[in-house]
Image (cartoon, rainbow, N blue to C red):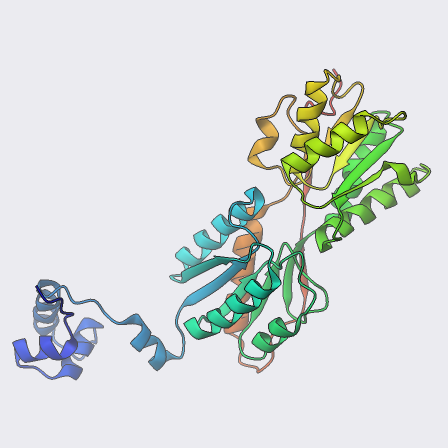
Length: 340
């Protein structure tokens, strides 16, 4: 059986009305009588008529679609942010297209162009950790508003939603100092992503303020901020002659890997080595002992990103905003640092 799609013209022919009357009736135009409106809607339902939202968007010069680009949709914290984005877009009647780059700058560039082709009203993006060429983003910014979140760059003149990374890392290290730890290590990303470097700055600030000498042997870099990397690094740390008595990891995944290996060697946590993570992922309360970590308000970040995009779309001027909006974090103390 040949497939067919009902059209306004077909409904109009069946009811012997004009196409414009059918269109106005379906849009509840007050100039069309209630009897006619009901008759048109009944026939549209019978024919399984589906309105063409794209055609309407061309008339309104809006598609009511938000494009979202992230490094990975499987990342725990990214998932929480995406939930916030979807809750907010659904609330205001927008549709959402979500794509991932897998931390590939070329894929990121390709997706930015595809978003323009889709006709999205604006783009929310968390940058690939390998992105160095910002020209693709700057070109898109000439046409559409962009809101950066989580993985950002202060070299892009657009609105950016960030957490207080430096202050958060400072509070994590300060907590380790408060429980008497003397040799506090940090595990960060080797590539030097925006988030990792900001957290490293917070680590350094805490050491400086409390007059702890900087020990280069306690600074560890990893290629991937994963559980596996945390495990491998801890195997190396465990073989050192002078071990740290505390480890601050810039992500929960790294911290989970650290705890798994410490448990393997029956290290007493936190008595011998305390561990702190960052992001308060679902893993943090599954691992034993439960992980002390920095809670980031992921859903709030997602919702705020959408609200800022809507604000920019509502502006009458020809320029998009360039500002940084910082959201607060909170240290959640659990068993990996809490000594009874």
